[in-house]
Image (spheres, rainbow, N blue to C red):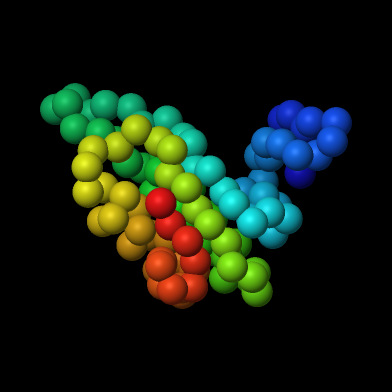
Length: 101
């Protein structure tokens, strides 16, 4: 695990290892790049990949967790492919088993 930044009181920290973040926290802010494709649409591969990583970590966690998507995406994207990737990887249902905004 490589730590990017850690506050001295441990109130806020950033991690490279997404699994570690999910395991040790109650809330995960998903903030990744959303570059533009040649046709002007948003490239979701980083958001989807991060959602899948978080989902796999949630599969091994036995506590409620809140996932907040902070990346710039078009309306409906979070409720569509991002939510689907998280639910599929975790086996959980957003709104019931985990928080998702």
